[in-house]
Amino acid sequence: MKVFVIGSGGREHSIVQKLKQSKQALDIFVAPGNGGITTQATCVAISDDDIEGLVAFAKEKQIDWTIVGPEVPLTAGVVDAFQKEGLRIFGPSKAAALIEGSKDFAKAFMEKYQIPTAAYRTFTEVEAAKAYLKEKGAPIVVKADGLAAGKGVVVATTLEQAIEAVESMLTANRFGDAGSRVVIEEFLDGKEFSLMAFVNGENVYPMLPARDHKRAYDNDEGPNTGGMGAFAPVPDLDQATITYAVEHILKPTAKGMIAEGRSFTGILYGGLIETKEGPKVIEFNARLGDPETQVVLPLLENDLMQVIEDVTSSNDPKLTWKKGYAIGTVVASKGYPGAYAQEVPLPELHNDPDCFVVHAGTKVTPGDQFQAIGGRVLLVGSAQETMEKAHEAVYRCLKQLDQTDDFFYRSDIGNVK
Image (cartoon, one colour):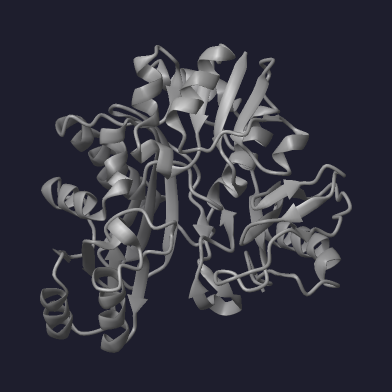
């Protein structure tokens, strides 16, 4: 079977690593891939937003299944383009991916179908938005409506920060078209968690919950990032909360999307928060989360390719999970999430049987040297029977990087002390 993975980050490398465990004989291609992926699959130099090129490649190679990693090609309609050519592809249509592509659409959708979320208002005019902020006060959340690579959300602790965020989006055009409309939400207090599910129409098959850490530095300090690490499952999350989230959030969302004429097939990601009133939605994504995927997939006992075939055939994949915990810590380039150096050589990480390494922003030179070319470079992870053992293994492996000033990582991911 020929399988084609679209994307270039840690999530896609994790997908490839899981596919390599498949009982089916798989020939795996990835576009465009990254340095680490080249050691396990055939990388092809096609950008993940070059939909014509991706379709042409899939037809030329007679690809059996395509799996879409990132949000940009999904919201651009890559699934529709593949299906128009009779090609099998796993992911939501352009219409369904709008649940991630527009926060305004997602909020209006949740309001219509009574899916618990924060109160909100949407604005396109800066003065009206500022007047609303002054009325509501801080803390408050300001979001760019469209895709902003995980950087379009400002949790403002002061009114001044909130006004600055609105002005940077609506006046200074910081995020281009993605920020031409802003969503202002009430601040929700509580612990966040991510709950992803395989979805096909009304059928919803939840994965293990995970928790990621967005802030750059220890103790959740510093600027927001795309994610500095994650762990799964979440020890302080009780089963009643998970069940509530599945029954009152994920399943009603799947049904609501059908009612809207936007039936969803693929991965539905709920970014959720525990509040005194129960779990509420912070955001929806239309694909696997990053870095949550890197700690959830290693705990999945099923064959991923078989799961996709089952889900898309309306068969229960009967998901089973390894007992224990997985922790993953991101290694980032110095300066991230701001400016950072490019093409920095990566120190060699010696194999540790208790750890796994996922590449994100890397490339490989003609001399087989790995170089860092992104903000988030690697994820070092471990799956063990206890959180303590996974934590110990990850940070034992990361000590190999302590001699370099070119990279940094948080020391408290999955900290159980």
